[in-house]
Length: 194
Image 1: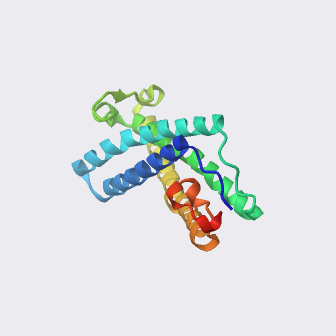
Image 2 (image 1 turned 60 degrees about the horizontal axis):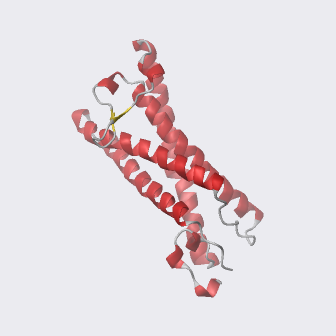
Image 3 (image 1 turned 90 degrees about the horizontal axis):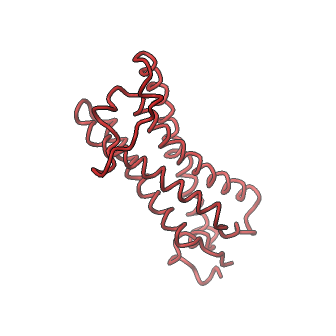
């Protein structure tokens, strides 16, 4: 059965966010593998990419709320429908929480004045002043807490949501042989699934 595909705007935002997410995760892993000044370059790129993901996710969410997505496949089993909706909305929550926690974490660092959130040399993204103005002892404990939250949220997206999303897409394409994957990658449409 052929399902209507997502709009061009939704598809572009999906793949932009996905590509940036892969890049930012790789940068995060690179930064965790090195010590001292070698951390600076990957983290300085990691920060504006996170803000970019936040802005693109807000745009995607606004688009989703103002433009009806294609109907979910009525042939899905109830558990598949619940899982698909849970993963999709889980991505929205996590793709907001992850950059917000990162923004808060770097705002609560005494190094924010030395290493601001430089948006690709165009301007500095503002730090959250309620965190930059904390007393030194509160700033450190707050940053530690935010760092733990940021890393936990990153693990959820890397080790839970992304694998579920990819495995679901592959299941539809190779096992179910339907056109679910073609809703987001139109050139993959199968004529035999129509």
